[in-house]
Length: 166
Image 1 (cartoon, rainbow, N blue to C red):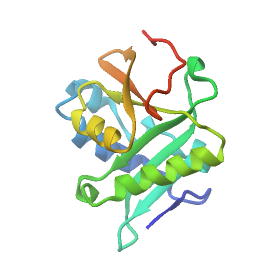
Image 2: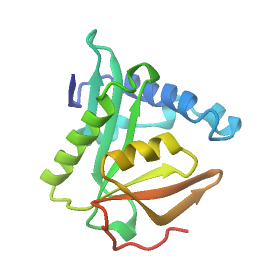
Image 3: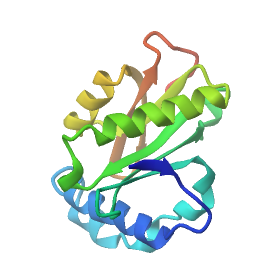
């Protein structure tokens, strides 16, 4: 089941999901020291609950989340953004990620965004393939923060209008 987050949801559990997914997904993609510094306090999903979807398994256990909203980068004013999409490894390859993305894209269209961007690690090839299957196209926009190097994917294909972040 996927539903919009509510103000009374357990956002500590959402932050724990973020942490768990980061530790598994990025274990071979980011330096250990970066991952070791992370705690549930590294994220604050409660600040943006109005633009967050939660995915639960049949036992009503949180297995995924997707956050979206206006693009955070000044160069992308007028764009929507999929800020994050995280699924526990046990919930992957079941169509949940695709459902989260579809619902986020619908919500962004309701918010009047006809262009959407998302950022992904340049080394996270499985995620990049997932985004391509969802209709996103790699751009030449990149940004680097310490050891984290990301590339932007845009939707729809051919959407342009921002410069390189570096």
